[in-house]
Length: 94
Image (cartoon, rainbow, N blue to C red):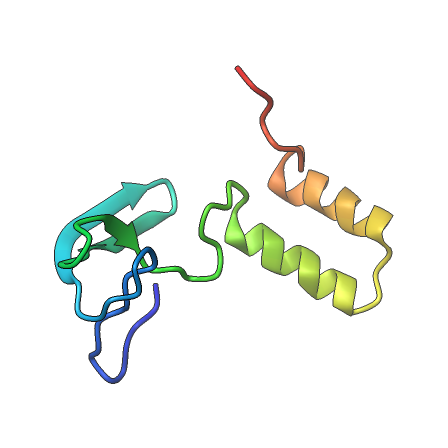
């Protein structure tokens, strides 16, 4: 979770206005995140931490990128993801 050192609140990702108010927490498999509600447009949002909308575990993404930039081939990166993080495939439509 991103900690703000300056204590400022995020800007609304929909309308860009400053100063949304806290609106509880969002609970998921990956933990809790602070939820915000915009005072201008009334929409609720979670601050973007770089993995907004990702279904894949952020740690798996970071591990894959780390291996790739160290020069490991893509086939070996994929093998590592299948071995350590599961199938490595997105779930299909149900």
